[in-house]
Amino acid sequence: MKILLLGSGAREHALARALASDPATTELVIAPGNPGTANVGTNLHIDPSAPEEVVDLAAQMEADLVVVGPEAPLVAGVADAVREAGVPCFGPGAQAARLEGSKAFAKEVMAAAGVPTAASVACSTPEDLRAALDRFGAPYVVKEDGLAAGKGVVVTSDRDAALEHGLACLAREGGCVVVEDYLDGPEASVFCVSDGATVRALAPAQDFKRLGDGDEGPNTGGMGAYTPVGWAPADLAERVVREVAQPVVDEMARRGTRFIGLLYCGLALTREGLRVVEFNVRFGDPETQAVLARLTSSLPQLLHAAATGHLGGVPEPTWSNQAAVDVVLAAPGYPGTVTTGGRVTGVEAAEALEGVHVLHAGTSRDEEGNLVASGGRVLSVVAVGADVAAARARVYEAVARIHLDGAQYRRDIAAGR
Ligand code: GLY
Image (cartoon, protein in one colour):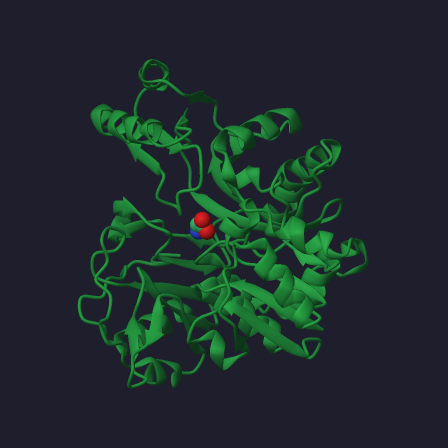
């Protein structure tokens, strides 16, 4: 199978690694990729959000499957264009991608599908926003309606801070902001693969969204993750399929916008039961880096079956009994103004440890071929071990071998799990 994978983060490096290691994959092109994906496939520099560039490349390489990593190409209609060109694509079309692209749309679909989530109000004026903040009270949950790379959500007990964030969202073009009830309970992510009718869940994971230890500091794109989630009910994945993903997939089909791809279900396990915190329409980052480290069945077979409407004919994914933990190493300044260009050393030394691999995200090579930081989240360091504690010990041993001046990482990923 010839596969074109779009994206350039650590999630895509994890996908590329899992796709390339399967004998079903005969050729893997990553566009644009990063220095890590260059080790497992061929990087080609196109704009992954430009439908015609993606279609041309897929035709040129005679791709059997296009896998879309990030959300931006999906919202831009890349999956629609690839399917129209007759190439199977793992990723929803632009209409279905609105489940991530608009929080208000996701809430509407959940209401129609009877999926449990927090009560919410979509606001388009400062007056509506103030009224909604007063209606729900503290802690205030204020979410930018559109895509914000994980940084559009503010949860705070400070009404002024909530109002300030909401007003900033409203000031942007097409400004709309969703204010919702606070969901009290631990969170987990369950990725559900669908061909538009059948749904298969992957192993649950937990991510860490805040920059600092103890969940302090600003929201980020994600600072680490682990799997399995031992504290969650053993039947969590089945329940998410039954109570969340299948009803949403069925509702999208009823609307004539079949959901083909990955429905990321971000969940809170509250005292009242399972509640959806958010949907994304692609693999989560950094959870994917941990989840794929435990996958023992074929990823290309799973994604191709979803893209071609044959998911029902593929067995449930299988998992190693090991645990996996990943820790994100971020550049100085992240998630604000990032300092790039710092030299990254020690990756090989980290990978010399048993059960450890290092995934690239914001890295590039300088003129001498040295690895340097070129983005906010620079690396995801992944370790597997007999249990979460063993994987955690290994991952931090590996992180200690990597150096980047001013690097930031959390010391409490998977702590106490
Ligand atoms: N882990 C959060 C995300 O992928 O958006």
